[in-house]
Length: 176
Image (cartoon, rainbow, N blue to C red; front, top):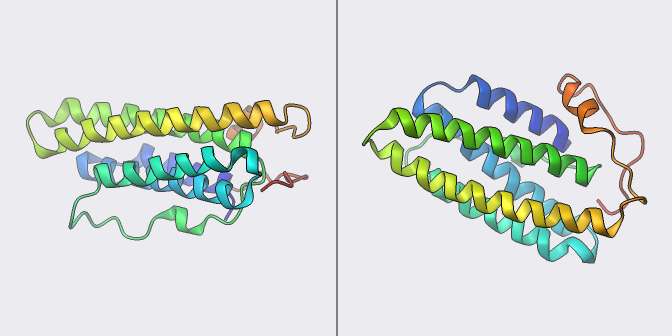
């Protein structure tokens, strides 16, 4: 499954999540997607982005551990279905927006949690999301510096406005 569909599915699931446990489970899914995208770009991207992609993957992995607890019951991550990242810069921009949405969701849960254990998980999750965002921004900056004109991404609004799975790129980035 391509990254755009996974981001759309994660965005929908995060919006539909109810309660602290449901929201934490969806944030875990988002963080697993960050890890998978970073790993995919590290394997299939060029040498110029390999280290930054690996750093993003590592940050996503640590973030998954920050909100995951034994017996959490989230099952298999949706990110396991990731097969391609045809437009890396556009995918990273959409993933950054998804991280921002996950951050807002965690703040809402933390405010409602009070002194419950969920509060501590939310705070750790927020720290982990910040690290993911920082690594993602570093990678995006490298991608944009490496090939600003060579790889033209579709307008993000075009990708974000399309129904999940309805948009397919015509030309793929040869680096991924």
